[in-house]
Image (cartoon, rainbow, N blue to C red; front, side, top):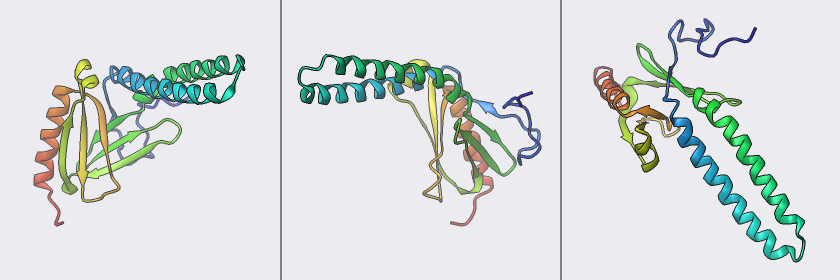
Length: 171
């Protein structure tokens, strides 16, 4: 029987804590951005091939088929990608995860937080969502928690700033 990804796994250091999920609405933003990239790449490749292909009518049909296939695959995975994003507030750090095949789990210690930023582009604003960005003492961290409801993002930002102040490490 497959293990539910939201079920606690005693092997992980978070014990019985449950992953907090981002809004399912974020899947639409993810889908739109990725579709735009696929369509843009398909158009550029199509123009290059058409200008160099001569009189081969099959080439545009093959390009169109490849772009449609990529769009379908992207659409199928968009909702699963968003379901894989989650976070846990632990006693001393925030645990963040994302990824389907290549899962990334990052622990951000509260005492190392230097900046917690809420950003909202036009697409996220239209969906009522925001992205929470963390800047730490490590340049490699680069943690972004996308797809949070605005009120949730602002409340989480305020809580993380308060936690960071109480656990400030020497830098």
